Amino acid sequence: MYLEFLGLHREASYYEKDLEQAIITHLHDFLLEMGNGFAFVARKKRLHIEGDEFFINLVFYNRLLQFFVVIEIKTTKFTRQDIGQL
Figure (cartoon, helix red, strand yellow):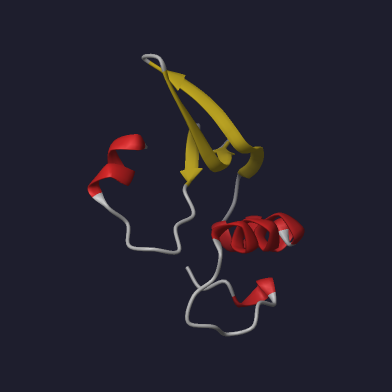
């Protein structure tokens, strides 16, 4: 997904918090980019799984397809450990 509507200057890399804040600031445009039926549910959603605590950057729900979309923002290489946490 190309996020040109966020208005960020082109850089080699961004901080995750800056990308997340830009998405929240431009939430309406982001939802339109994702497609029909999406609703914003949470930011920094805390999950407790088997005694461990995890935080999901952004959570959306698609009311047409009836499923959650979890967005984990990474500005570094996405690793197997990241997948395991999701």
